[in-house]
Every structure is written in structure tokens, then in C-alpha cells.
Length: 313
Image (cartoon, rainbow, N blue to C red; front, side, top):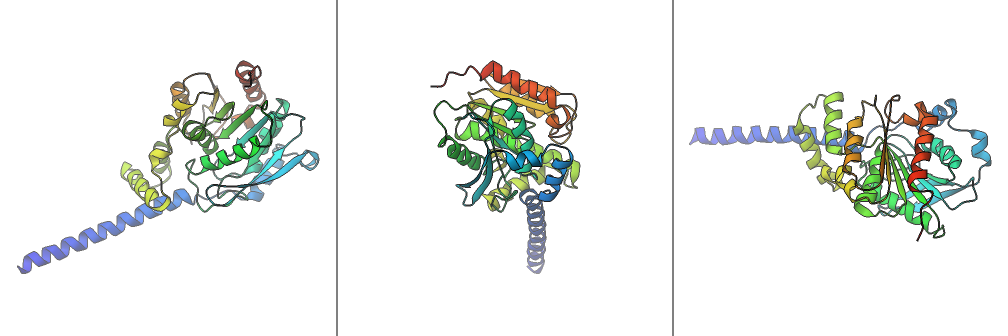
């Protein structure tokens, strides 16, 4: 009887220790995910100035409207609506994780040359926008929906509206279009991941000691408990099959952060009008920075093929 009690006590102690370790690991992994370290806002601004992608004189003189949009997630989305042209055609640009809307301004100049005004905004927990955690597209897609609705209310029925996303912004774009609405006229997805659980596993094995699928399963459980969603809810591969509008998929072949195979997979899964462009130069989210002229021509050709003769209803 005494031996049985000792066994029960030892077993209980062992399972308690294991449970505590599992809880600690799950908490650490999810904290690293949802509170990912962001780049300093001043660093981003100075980087873009130094690279001549942020023109202070142009910024000071271009017509623009500062946006304060209510998020359905309970905070204010901060953005800027650049209006250099007398047109209702508008692009909405979604930046990548750890960046902010200043990183998107390089695309404003691009789309100005292509005949569009442009909205840039900060994702939740980035830049000036509220929100406590990053969700890699899950909650961000609802914010994109709010931004798009806000902009459409200002425009006439003949406006052509597109969404451009980079990295997490590209995944957000596809999740919005494939799981919420497909209300824009076209989408550009630059270096998205096709499934965040696979991307997470790849980064965990590459950057941390957690080199097991168990770590991903723990992250999945703790994300559900802490944030209210499963990793399967951040899978653009399941969303992209529902997108009817044209999509331009872009990736740089040297990208070793989000592998180009993910974009190739998304392109193959997408039904209907689509284009794929793989650049020979550029690390992650550097396709435009390394290949600006070719990037612009790629977007121009895509617009000419699918959009410029769009018959608006």
C-alpha cells in the first residue's frame, strides 16, 4: 500500500513537472510569435531616406489625407491616403511584419506612375496603429476589410481598387480576399507564405532550439488559448482557391526567409486570372528594391492584361 502511494506521488510529481515544462515552452514560443520584435520606426524612416525610397520634398508637397479608421478588433488603424493624381483609382498597400507604413511609401511612387492614388497603413501593433499582438493575417485581414470599406465609401462606382501586400501583408491580402470578401478588382501578393504553420516550423528549426513538430503543435494550442485562433486559420493556400479576381504573385528566388516554393504553390492553386513573376535577385521582400524597373514593368503588364480595360458594373 505504501509503495502504491509512493508510486502515485512520484507519477503525479513527474506529470506535474512535464506539464509545467510544456506550459513554459508553449508560452515562450507563442510569446515570441505574437510579440515579435519590431524594427524601430526611426530606423525604418532613415533606412528609406538613405535608400532614396522616401523623398522628403515629395512627401511634404503631395496631396494626402491622414486616416483614422476604426478596427473591428477594437483600436484605431492609422494610415495615409496619398492623392497625387486626379483619379479615383486606388491601391491599398499592406506592409510586412516588423515594418510600418513608411516601408510602403516606395510603392506609392510606383503606383502613381501607373495611374493610381495609394493608401498605406500600419498593421495592428505596428507603427501608430493599436493592438497588442501580431496574428500574421488572422486579425489583420479584418483590418484590411475595414480600410477597404472606408476607402470605397469615398470613391465613385467607376473606381478601380487594388490591394498590394508584401510578406505578411501579402498573406493578409489573400486571406482577406479568400475568406472574407473579394471586393477589390485585383491583388498583388509579394512573397507570401502559403501556410503559417509550415512557415513557423521552418523558422523554428532554422532560428531556435525547438526543432520538432511538437513545438508547432504546442504553439497551435497556446495560440488558441491565448489569441483565439488556430494555425490552420492562417493558411492562404486554402483561401486562394476562393479568389475570383486577378492575382499577381511575386517572389525572389534567393529568398530564404519565406521560400519561393510557397508562392509557386499559391499560384498553382489559384483558379482564374493570375500571373507569376519570380525575380533572380533579391532577398526576402526585396524584389522591388533590387529590381525596380522590372518590377514596375511586371505590374504594368499585369494591369494591361487584366485591369485597364476592366468593364466596371
